[in-house]
Image (cartoon, rainbow, N blue to C red; front, top):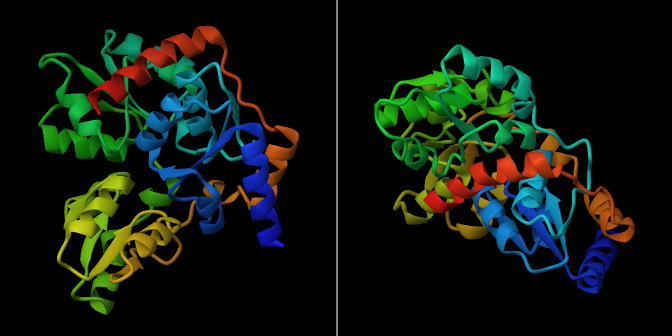
Length: 302
């Protein structure tokens, strides 16, 4: 049955002149169907460049919103409307405006894992791939409010030496990882390097061998002479790592390292999205224009 769905998706995609984008955390069969697989920064760039009439975003809702913000003339679909991001829900534009007023209008650096409305209240966006460069681009002496991920913010503050006002948000999947769990994996795989995502708590990022975005983790393990790695990020990424580095071994830093929202999109839902052109993502123009400025600054930094 999956073969039939895959064939239908390929044919329908061609018929519609559609582009399928997928995040690294998506199910393997979704990654296989995609025209492009990447992290948030890579997906944003690819969406902005898209010439196809329809962009199908296999990820969570803020990723689809970003595609619409960056390429408003295209129809943007998400195959599962309930695929959200708990971290993104931890900040609202209303609360952000209150915090900005409290601190005298600081520069707001907004992690891309946020709603379009929150991006519209921000000065510049960032991803885990370029957060260090984004913060370094802000003149010394300016107060910086970093939203919504306190763990990524703490990592950036440590690496840049800048004092950041941190929002109390976090990724529920990465936030629960403890160094004790990593140590248990080290006992099982003593030769393995520990490579983690900066959404993990400080106790983990401080002790890991390397801290990278998802795309950065892939690059790191490709270039490393090591053959074994303990990976501190979502389980779906192991499929990408095995595909690109078949001669290396990968172990999750904890047994249950899964984002349920990222697993909501299936082949059946992707096929339905293409068949019925559902679910279209709409961003009000006043919000889109402001959010575009923040995203465009992020992309310009690289």
